[in-house]
Image (cartoon, rainbow, N blue to C red; front, side):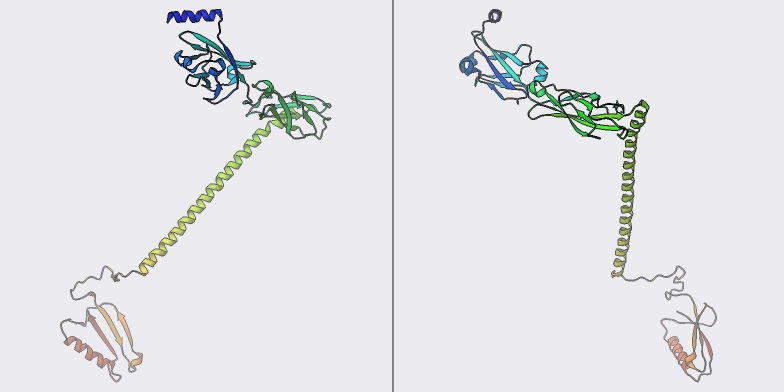
Length: 374
């Protein structure tokens, strides 16, 4: 092993390379993608790759490339990001060696990494802040071609993918400003007048030259004013008013939702109660259970001879004309009481005979009091 290492170092020091080959691949290729047929391009035998335990040596670089000995081809082991590998250095190349043992042999392989348009432009100025509004001030005395500001952007891609162009997408007054196509300079294209609004809002789009192209958008606030206090009075209230309107809208929607929920809940409860009462009344109406009469607590069977133990007075008023007779129910009494025994028939006959006498129209009896205990 030591001899092999020494021999390998001697080869490196002498710079003896048995062969070299170069490939060019785009960045961001998927894992396992084909790079090149190293056995065919270098004239190597597949058996020699297997017996020599051929491997890829990348030095300090990460292992982006792997060798398939059975096929004699180079494959993508890890996805390659050109910007992470080389930064702004061009051209970007990956240098590696194919090393074999018994005897030691090595071959040089250079892989050129082609840039892909995988990064959008990045706006450096004006800085986009979420909490505050940054505005460029233009005096009302500004002439045509007055330089308002300059949009600065970069693209980390290389070559033509990093070529940027600037366009004015939207503006409060498109007849007042223009944007340089190549340099991103914002200038006035006419004389500023007193009728121009103080707050001017420009939307600039930055595009690269890749296929397909990528873009970024920047918002530039411009204040047309002669004094700084005027700019503050115009721009400081804008975020607060917007925040206030957003909060007011939120609370109004929340209140409407709560009121609607309470109304629907009350309506459902009322309908449920109505339906429940209606079902209960229907159940009682169609019930086949026997009706049990209700008697007040004072109606107890004290004599053990019936269900109505109390004494009732029946006052019969008779006149010569039986059709004008009247009957009263009096209060309970204890005098002249006639007790009816359920087992006796004589009492019933006596009552019937007395009834017949009272019913006679010529009877001289005008008033009779009869007391019956049932």
